[in-house]
Image (cartoon, rainbow, N blue to C red; front, side, top):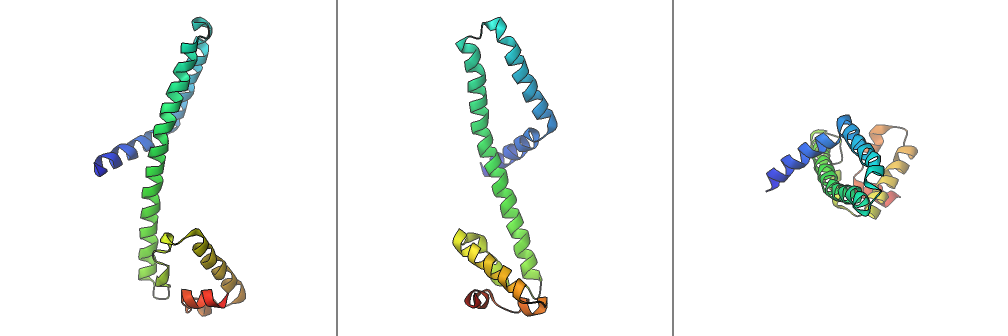
Length: 136
């Protein structure tokens, strides 16, 4: 089921992200708007576009979220590999995406202060994350 949904979501996101999809959607709205006078702007005429846009928006939210989740996870895996491979990188940063927003902000603020206070990059890379947080 996972593989099937991933394939469908990826293909759908790819199609929906193309300029042609925007052009087709715009043309459909124009056709709908032009048909208004011929259908006497009936409730059915209004219901058609309301229902279609609501359903498509509802489904698109899931597709977009799935794409963002996969992109984010892939990016985190790549960054973790870079941290693992670099000799002077702080490996404690691997997995920090699982921390709370407040914890991540605290680490980011400490890093920014550390970089501003130290002119030499060599001095900043030798500190552990815990030492960094204790300083600030």
